Image 1 (cartoon, rainbow, N blue to C red):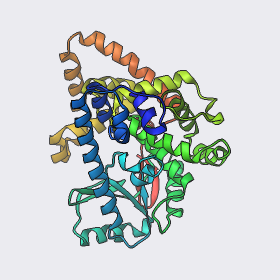
Image 2: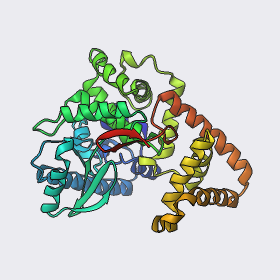
Image 3: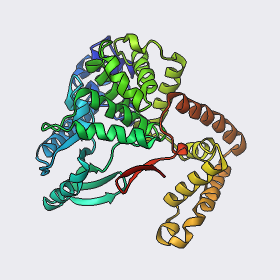
Length: 379
């Protein structure tokens, strides 16, 4: 798979493909990347046909997404986050897998932007503290009240203010701010499961925008939001495994940490879609519960997600942590060799938590930032 990525993005070397590699790249949401090089890849003819069809479908999604983005009926200033703003750094932007259209306006313009979407046929399907999700003709728009989900409220406000202050008529953020968005996007999904798509978004930005002489400018931004180490380690990881040309500023990275991070990326898949309920048992119920207060808070949060009765009947809400405790215990003990597996998972999860701490990324146990009454506060 790494050889396929190097061939697709850097035109380096040669590659052999199998059905297993194809499925893994789909799990990582990067299977369209080799589309323009399929004739140069050694693979069975049936697989090549399947891969071509997949790439054509992805190209269709990209075209639909970019068209809908070009006619979004919002007249107030706004910025496009991720998506096409990330794909611009790819050699073939059309083969970067697309998802939702993420939009951020100035805070005072959000209600008007939402109303303009509703007036033009969009429907609200979900409304959260962070964003409003709307859909029309299969196109999903996430209208952000805020973007940053860092553990520190001041850092989150700083990044969101930077985004808002740098909104342009083209709706594309300046490269340095766009890079911060991509870095924070990795940070947001690290605990739940980060995949190669998010990593490659960052890698392609680094390739185009962060040569050694540009790093000091970006370093100040990354350090301000406490993500400088994540930037350095992820960049060195991309050099070691994915073909990114070397930068002097990444030399300070601990390569054993790079290896551990890549192992985690490969085990997670895109947005954690490869994670199992077993992983939830060990990581959420044990590893992130470093104190009784943290344990209770996390159990309560997961309990509210899983206990439908508490969602319907507020009187049950205070007991959601009890429900979740029994849920974890039941799942964990029903498995074969339950105790020995829990011990092994606990050890893996502890190492993973240590990695998160070393990278300085956001974790739920440190308290999530929310936006209330015009202020960034910790829950």
